[in-house]
Length: 288
Image 1 (cartoon, rainbow, N blue to C red):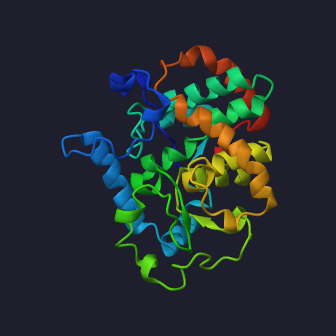
Image 2 (cartoon, rainbow, N blue to C red):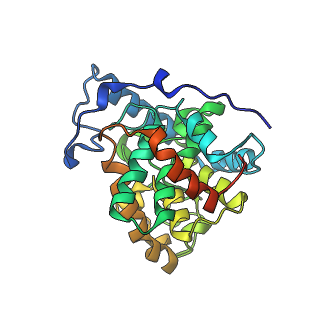
């Protein structure tokens, strides 16, 4: 197992996106598509690479590589500090290290759902799988909206009409139909998502026998699955359990998305509370 080195958060803080935004300004992938907009160009290129390379076979390789949880050992607080090395290249709304977004999300949830401590903790840890980007994985297979592999690509996927033309699965009759390799209402637990931080963090939580409730696990696993929880696609693959969990994922999305431009939180002041939740639901050192 590798040891991880901590980096001072102040070394990576980028203040250029502190200003608050209106709701309609979030997830705007197209409004400013000039070649002079470096941020949007970076986002578009991340998705182009993702949609070209994320095939069924690729996803199977990543499950084999990372699903064994043999890369490192860290507790949750160390993982949060380690996450401070990552700035999400797929996100058009924020350009600061993810640790700030983690606490922003958790605190917004805490304000609205004060009696659900597991929900607060879910907000804090939901992006921890992005540590994959620090272990050599390119961001196009770590961050960004996820989608199902093994069947046709849904219409609501961002950049759907332009960035899948070189994905080999798009030409494979085994994969390019509505159901592909799946059966109707088979359940999302039986489909394979494009590889990313959602699935990896879900695997970490389950593989370490943590006690986060099922609702929290769904939020972790599918919070980037915008074509489902926001676009309304892939419902033909969902079973009753998925439909029952969908409102929880949508509730989480309110805080995940709309907290991104708020003032930066006082992380040190918040740590004792969140450490108590970690001790309750996922104590000690976890395998990653």
